[in-house]
Length: 179
Picture 1: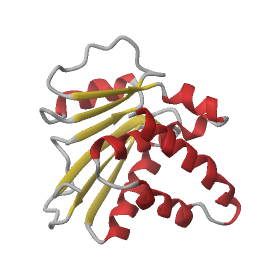
Picture 2: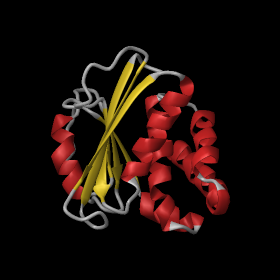
Picture 3: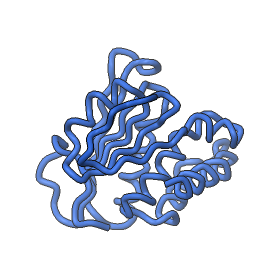
Picture 4: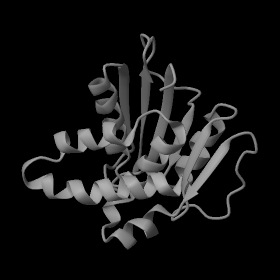
């Protein structure tokens, strides 16, 4: 893991961007490093804009505000347009091309395009598009290993949601392979 990683995850409400951020923060806490997760919602929860920022560091985190992220995960066009300009030079930009087509990306960042919705439908569940993007992110950033994330799945998908672990692990692995 790098000393400090700051990521912004953004999309429409209902795309699971908050869950990605929560999982990253849980994984950091579980690994014994410092983390801050800050959610930001638009006027509606589902369908409105939503984003969160996550800071992960083996050092003290002085501010929860992420102004120049190391990485951005953009699930839709408004999110890409809002956060791509803030991304650090040589940063990592993960783009859901199911919702973003023919975009002229910055030339000074690393771009990974994934048709997350299509890939999720191929797995049989559109709701795991976020986990495909999470898999791509952990593979491309090196922030966590797959085991760090799957361990969190077993903690958050409990009781009646335990049946969701397998599909989420498959989505995570698929995202890792696509990155």
